[in-house]
Structures are given as structure tokens and as C-alpha cells.
Amino acid sequence: MKAFCKTGFRVCAFALVFALVFVSVQNVFRHKGAGVNYLDERYRDFREEPDGTIDVVYLGSSPMYRGVAPLMMWRETGITGVNFAVPEQSAFNNYFELQMILETQTPKLLVLDFSSLFSDRKADEVQFRYEYYRVFDALPSASLRFEMAKRIISENEEQFWSDYYFPLLRLHTRWISLTENDFDNQSVFEPYVKGAGLLTTATPLSTGPTFDPSEPFQYKEYSEYSLSYYRMIMDLCVEHGVQIAAVSFPKDDSRIYADEYQSIQRFCDENDIAYFNFNDPALLQTLGLDYEIDFYDKGHLGASGACKLSKQLAVLLKERYGLLDHRGDVRYAGWDEDWRLFYEAYADYVEAADREADAESSYFRNGEEQDGM
Image 1 (tube, rainbow, N blue to C red):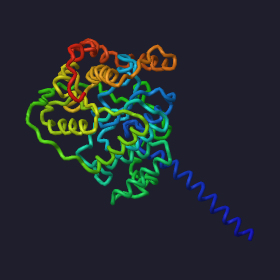
Image 2: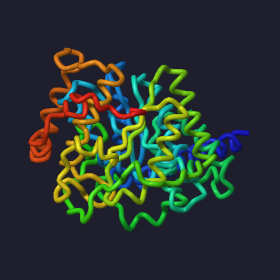
Image 3: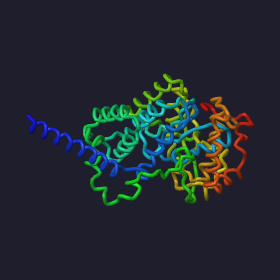
Image 4: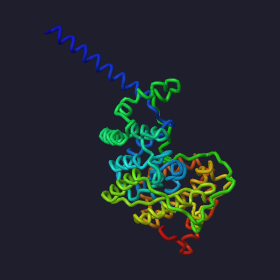
């Protein structure tokens, strides 16, 4: 009997040590930092924000990640916000990110780009599979991760529990690219940017945005899969008293996206959602974009362009949704310090934005606010 107990103890001890080592190794191999657009650090920073202090959250894909600077919006209007956008994001992932957000904050407004309204972007699609992994790995809530994995596996034939709970099985070849940060996991994403991924390289555009809402177009068909998750997002917002707005970011030769923009406008009209399309000439002209320096590439704003758009978007959101100006409120003193750090890092781009027309533009002074806005 003693021998049996001794053997059982050794087996349990070995299993415990093996589990601890396995988990530690998995954490080393797990993508982090730049490999996941700093999503793990951005989630962590967000959860450290004081309760009830976030007015706006932004969910979408790379044009939003690169194009919305919450600290610029704070400086301009005193509204607070956090940018959660990442490249090629899906409605599915947006739904679980929103649940994570609502665990610690109840924002007044959710801003979406509805970038997957016309495609499934399911986990079985190789192009988007990695996006599911990185959101799952970064989510801080174990119960939310479990619910997310359960849904993914039930909706995708080629996804398995092991893909999510034993990532070492899919990451074992990553040893070639391990860095020092994989072992010490030190934060390298500055929390004062509030989730924004600003790009400081510029590419001159050959054409610039060319969308004309008066030209002929054809409505695009919605993805039923993505639509179901956008509707779940809308239901969650109704439940928590969160309003929704939509935004599209300037693109080079944006005429070719006319069908998409007009279809988003129709969707927003159907669901009483304000749509701010910065390819529309009426809004585009308020930004004062310089196509030589304000774009990173054809589909993404550079840092100076993001600062210009953020100034204007801040005014639009504050005016339409009655968001409060928190500047001077002692509860938000940390935002003034974050602004100081942001300005030190991006002074040239902030000043480029400030050289343009004041954000309280003729678009408002002349009473020309557009239908559906």
C-alpha cells in the first residue's frame, strides 16, 4: 500500500511539474508584442483604466488601427477613447472583444468600420485563422476564451480545441524567431497611445480619394455569417446602453469601393446608425489632407493624416452624441499626462494637423451636415 501511494505521489508530482513546464514553454512560444499588433498589451492597458472613464471604443481592421488617435481626440474635445482595431478583423472577433470591453467599462459609444460586412472571415479561412488565435490568446478572461473556442469549433470544421488550448502544437517551429522579449515579456507598447498604431512613413498618392456618391453603383450582398455577429453586437449594445456609429477611412482612388460604401450606408440607414464616410467629398474636404505626406500607403493613413482625421472625428462624435468634455476634471488628470507623452512622440505629425483648418470647420458652420450623419 505504501509503495502504491509513493508511486502515485511521484506520478502526480511528475504530472504537475510537466504541466508547469509545458505552460511556461507555451507562453514563451506564444506570439506577443508586434506579432499580434500588441493586442495582449493593449487589452491589459485597457483593463487598468479607471472604471467609467472611457467614452468611446473603436473596433475594426487596419485602417482604423492606423487612423484613429484617441489622444488627439482628447486634446481636441476632451472625450476619451481606446482603439482596439487590428488588421483583417472579423465581426466574430469584434463580438468577443466587445464582451471583454463590457467586463470593465460601459462606453457611451462604439465605433465600427463594418469591414467584414461582405465576407465571412471565418476561422477555417487560412487568411483569417491567425486573427482568431491572437484574439483568443490575448483575451484576459478564461470564461470568455472558453466561450470563444466553443463557438469557433462548432462553426468551423477544421478548428479544434487543441488549436486554442495547446498552441505549442501549432507554434513549435517558432523557436527560430524567438527574441529576448519572448522570455521576459516586457511591455513595449506605450499605453499613452490608447491602442493606436500610428505609421510614421509616408507614401505619396498618385490619385487620392475619388469616391463620388452621385455615380452609379450596385449594392453588395451581406455575409450572413458576419451579419449575424454584427446583429449580436448591436443587441449587446442595446442591452448595455451603448450607441453605435460607423466610419470608413480615406483610400486612394476610392471610386472603386463605391459599391461597398453605398452598401454600408444602406445598412446603417436600415439600423439607425450614423455613418461617417471620409471618402465622401463633403467630409473629405474638412480634413485638409496632403496626399504627399498624409498616407502610409493607398489604404492607410500615416501619422499626420491620422491626427487630422482624429481631430475632425472627435468633433463629429462629440456634437452628435453629446459626449462630455473631461478636460480639467481631476478624475481624468492622467489623460493630460498621456497627451504630453503623445505629443513628445508625435509632435511633428500633431503640428502638421494643426496647420490645417480648425476642426470646427465650414462643414458645421454652414449647416451642411449630410443625410444619415
